Length: 151
Length: 258
Length: 106
Image (tube, rainbow over all chains, first blue to last red; front, side, top):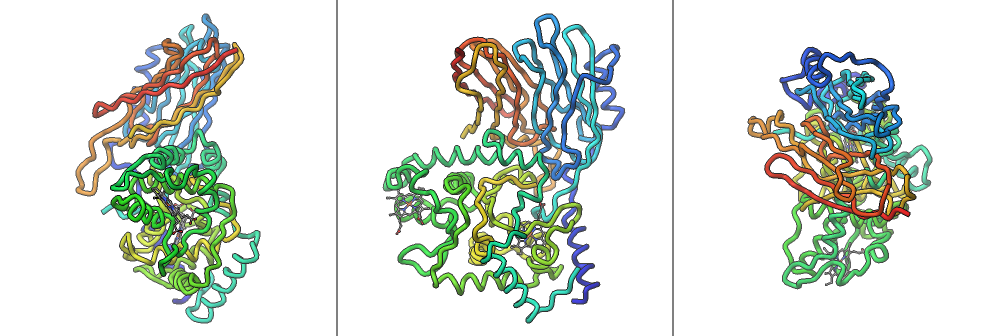
């Protein structure tokens, strides 16, 4: 094979192995906004106090480690009572809702999520005093190569 | 991309990678090093590595009596931590009294049939993966050490030949990607050097643990080649070659890969 | 085969904030993916995860199909007394798994 042909075959391989893990039915930014509103009602959501930690470049959207840390004394009178995570483009805007309280000592939780595509992720923390704080992250998802034949 | 000529070109590549394998060349590196810190951390932390779920299941199977002989692996082999340490790093190997190499999965199934008098476990079944992961875990951190059984030589060479042979509709050889283009990007993914040091691995794409065989099948499908049947000898030949090429690298099973 | 891995320190000083990690084998089938026959594979996920300390709930999480297969959750808890930390996962198709570990608080 000539170098050029070989390069072409190699690029063709690249094309063949690119498959999107999710099909149709995507959450749109509008449905994400609606899902957030369901949680926060008319309260305002401020940016800050929340750190949303995700790898900036995601090697496989099937399993994306995510940590949410919220600054809070976690006392009976002043604590984080819930953490919600939303995404823009998965089929459903909700990722998870966690309920916590003073027994946790620290408002830090970790899990792993699925992301079908590059998009924005938002974490919202609800305090025991009724405030909402948030952080967001833009992530880039690369797609796996050489996956299995789906047929 | 560099041009790879069949014939002389192949022989020299073969010689080069073979020499690298034997001298423990530092330019060899694990697929682990091609991953970002988040996935490396997932592999390193036993309480977060999903492959450990299979290791735990494997431990239970190790102690469970089964088959017509009603024997557990542990009845004969006692504590795996002592008796199975250093075993996974030398497979594929030729079991005593036979003439053909088997991989670790194949060796486990020999004990299933000959010693437990039970049905062999299906390839890629949860049980077989669990036992394989449990045994491989006993060798974590040990250098890959292919046996220097001279009978293995011809099989290893056949494996090397398969590795260099162009195949599939895209007419690519394993070597085209994993030797000539390792470290480059393919559809956004870094092409690894194809070392078997993490297997069985928890591959995020599979959302499960899987064997080296399954990984090789994925590459064959990727180049639009007909994947060999699950029980075809070609896999063991390729595994023999890959283990030899990775000689001296540390086993890190169960690994995590994207 | 229910397969769960829990990581909690065996001992802690009273008042320590300890990290708790829980991993469970589960496909987390989204209900959005077509199977090999082209038909959608029915949703099969863990929907609820909770943890208790000597019977009192200390953490809860509602999951969706966007949680990765073999769900992993980590969180913290104040070690206030020795006892049992219980874990419970429930979800589609009647899925229910329970596990507990003990911790000594001095």
